[in-house]
Length: 222
Length: 232
Image (cartoon, rainbow over all chains, first blue to last red; front, side, top):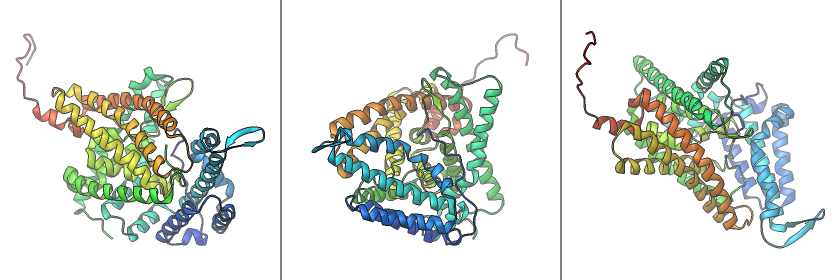
């Protein structure tokens, strides 16, 4: 929450990880993360193995580690929750560095941090090494419903168009001296959201008409 | 706020994943009824809109800000089935292209913030519409109340899921109080912003608002005599 989703995660490259078919990468990611989540959190060594696997894939992909580290901020809200866990969980208490904390809470926090971090790192690696259109083709090969892939394709295609439209509205507001500081400014922002919806919807109608005039019958040509 | 990997145990994630898949499957059929062959481009653009509004920050106080979750507003603007599709696709894209929300938690995220907010928002909206008089000015009010209720409802479902498959034994009454309390506040923001945004859309293009169609259909054509002195 609050963190922007706007940055592009893709890191251009030609490594074997970049060239691997997208559907294999998605399946591998899913299998890996299911394995991580199913690993009992008492098996500390297993998480070392999981981390080594992710780091090896990142190493082969030649995506700079600093590039991925910067983008791990999406995890921050849950790190906060994990850090609170030892203090609010119940069960037998123990003393760490002079502070009384709950033992199951401590173990739970470790599990959350380890599994969450591995999951984010693995997902980031997929996002950094896969172009959106390859991902769409991969999902189609994985038998995701055709309509769902089409919707996703249109969303990915127009994501930048719609977000830059929002950006232009912000520039227009601010060049007229507006800056939102408190809830009394919500009506202005909400009207911007409303205008964005109307523009997006009307763009969708225009896109549909343009597609019809090129012979669209409900399926995308191969 | 997206649930990451490892927050809920594997069996719970599998069950929510199955529920999400079934919900999206139903929505794929239902959306065909709402939008026929316009589904793909329109739902795609609306999904991009939902994604973009999550980047529009509403200042609260002293530097903090929040943004719309968008389930209830999507349901009111494009209908519940298309709303489910749009929010689900947003989570799918955020999960695979932005690493936001865990891959195994995708089902959980879709169930909580897609299915639940859309469904609760839509049911409350429709319920209020049945009770309130049919006037265009009341559409945003019903939408706002639907959005307000949808957020703590999703929080409550999260607590239930956490009780079934949570990662650590947190006292449930504390967790319920904290989650529902915080989300009542977030819900107020969601409700007010939804009310304002739907209001601005109904004022300009009421025909684009799915939830306003019945109201518009009930409106009668009025013929008013021109004011005296007005030139023809």
